[in-house]
Image (cartoon, rainbow over all chains, first blue to last red; front, top):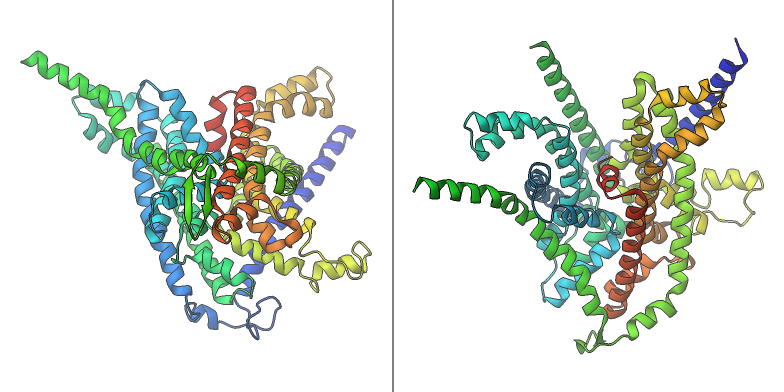
Length: 271
Length: 294
């Protein structure tokens, strides 16, 4: 073996080891959360391992307030996904397919929410609600979540639209289809994977949000708000169960989406 | 008559992009842009929560914000800056390995980098509390190795807060760099080595400059959220580690001193707008969306 290839191999091994440790660092807390969902803690603290139990998995909502908080989070996430995906996809369509005045500054404006720290977004929105005398609660959380999701949807769907052949839409229009028919039968099926990815991203961002929500929640509780409140006295293992279940659900959906897209691509290639 | 129908059809087509833009853009104007600007109005009010606040050009909130909370501002810059550098040092070799040596495991490895983001962010931070706790495995090992003093702590220290920030935003550093490395034309590196550049020279003069947009984008996507974060400082730090986010949060929600809170959050926003402006100056506007899409 020559000196050069040996040196290359040594570098690859070193990089591999480094990457292994980096992934371990990323996964350590995740493993811990999953493991402690099976812990049987004595008292409120779920900090040390006591013994294996399935009790929490059988009844994760046995802790007071957790069920309501979790249901609120799911409802807000679902509603904010629907609204932000519709609004964001329309904006992405306009940006990708039309040349209009103000297109470039608009792109910049849409980038700003992505670059704004959560604390500024949350505090500013609360400032507006206070100025306007709007009582905060479920509705204001929903408004906030749609707000921070729109820009992410635009960016995700736009990437898909730009990777797609615009001639297909022109062909449909040349053959007499109007805008709506073209969108329904040509554009939408083609950008569907991008829209699905955007919906999943928006769902995760919404269900995970603590900072923006904490400003605009009023007395309404959500899953992250519950966790933060419990963190001082010790988070009950039921929370670990719900967080783990959510992780698995999202991963399954993602894998399913990728597998489905691959099957479609293979079918198209075969046809 | 037919001519008129044609005209309205054309007109309709011209108006269509605006019609489909309006709902989404209006939402962002009303619930993002106006609130951020409204902060200026709130910051110039004076009064108390009991008697109510009234607008009267009260500039003193900015004086208070800058003099009383300078320490927290500087600390936030230091913590977020350190976390950004650490995240870069950890993430770069990782995504370099995935992009150049990943082979057919590339997608799986990339998915592994993103996966922790789907575990609740607060729960991951709470897990770090468990890992770093005083009688935990990590602290005990460090004590027996003499790295940590006998009565030394890991939890409720600066180290814990910075480690937490680094951890939380690591994937946001990794993804844009990965996207940039994937775009590097391998033939350029080959050409350089053919022309007698050493591996190191080729890396430094070709790979790194071509990955630079990703590095800058990743740094921004790590630095900005880290700068405004208060969850890590709350859960992993003590009162000595308060960041500017903690101050804004407690001023708004606990002390109800709205003008000062608004002034602080507006100053933070202003600082970030300046950062983004510099970024656009250096790398151009197009790179914004590419970075965000990665």
